[in-house]
Image 1 (cartoon, rainbow, N blue to C red):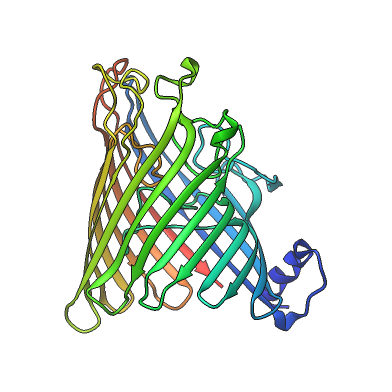
Image 2: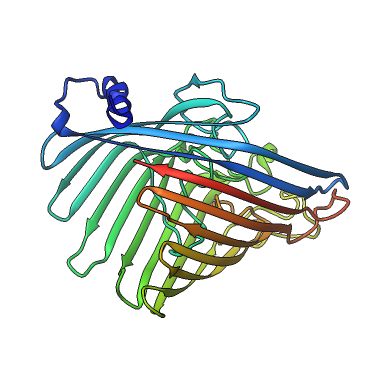
Length: 375
């Protein structure tokens, strides 16, 4: 019995019905590698640490008909000090975390899908990303399961694909009173019943062969979720964020391409500087932006890219960019064959504004080497 069939048979019970092998598509990936970071903390201390990380995901999709399908996928993450294999049906990420607990297993996809005409609907638990194309793919508003992390979106996703190539997306994302299922930074809070549904809409177009590789604009609205004076104060308002991104490409020699991209984002209502622990009076800034440059396929299977971005303290939606920090990253990708990917990353992050209680700004240098195998 090969590994793909074994993985599929193990997941069939999650579909809750009897299916035929020819109607089921199995998928999965395993990512493993080593990560190291050297961090100058705000209290004056230094942390120099490294660990081996692992993420495993395996799923099965049952194609019921030409219109309907069902998919379930389990995901596990761990490191060299913690991989206990405990299954938990997470409904939100642990408080203050950007990942499920190390060593745990959960569903990161479990949805019903309907595709007909120009429409594509999903309801349940799914993955959705909107990021700049290139060797270093990052986004300011919506990223599920970056790096070795496991996140997801619980809710509804409807997409309409127009004849001219533009795609129109609407997502209704569910959260619990304990928190969201992807990275959302404080003082966003979901205590209010009105905040349990995030409304996300985007318009996007991709052209793999054209000058404009990627264009998109999106808006996210989280009602009654921004505790702008801090959660303890109790005052809240809606949190709104808008983002726009553009990636362009030019042919070089042979199959190589130069890809340049930019993204800008803004949140008009932001927490106060006091709520964010920053000096001064008034509200924190709510801007975020990134610039990216990549050379794709400079040799067969080889790509390299660099990105620089800044995320102000008041922009609270980015998984890839920590708020009140700048980021510089260089990444090298090598695909030796189909389903194999080696990546090497070097990154530096630094506080934009020193916190009032801090001895110094936080500065972190880190790198990783990781390999991903996909079915």
